[in-house]
Image (cartoon, rainbow, N blue to C red; front, top):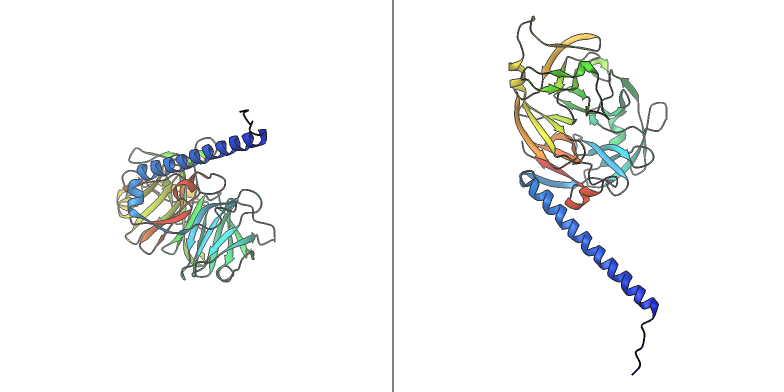
Length: 339
């Protein structure tokens, strides 16, 4: 009997189907492998942390940088986009989310990095080049999808803040240092009393009704920080937490005992460290190994942090469309960790 040859089109279809199946299997293996690797490497983190809710915009080109919780349970997320203006996302108390367009006080579109966002009972503050923008808190609470929120004003600083947070009625803003792409002024780089080397600075502006947007025009002190700091918060027990992260390396939550920070400072005027900030010499406090109470390893790109409900809440940018790999192990969610 003569052999009937299979049509060329059918052979090609089978070959393509086989290739697609092989690729699918490879993707599933890669997914399982990355998930297993991350969950094993950071087992301590996942054992203690709880997954709270999805970070909005991670499948829509949004690269999250920071998060902030309002008094009524609303959440704000700042960052930038893979293309176009930098949005802010709001997550309302009922779980619904909205993408907001941001403009400066002059009406120009906000296209900053969105590296820090925080709020008090009147305002929302968002980092901008060489300072920060100030908005009405009410505008964010009432915002719906695609609403445009315009800044009321702007405050200029001596540096471009990489993170910011309001804790204990004090506005904290700090710099980010990584050798090469993110350099720092020489006077920010220093040896600490415990023998560490720091290269970043954080200012602290206490609440002041007569100050700019409710905070003093002069920082009360400066903190010397390690490199690669992306966020900060303060716990109810008086611990200052820094998130340290860059690239694919493990992130770290550095927990400092503020009581030890104060105790380790020199008490005499002759030896007390100072730092020139806002044109005035102010006390300089060191966050280094002498006051480090705990170093918690976290998955890569764990950056924005917020103290809420007795836990540190963490946002991670690795699950954004820009980086993708975080989607393989659930980094597109906010995690809450007890300290």
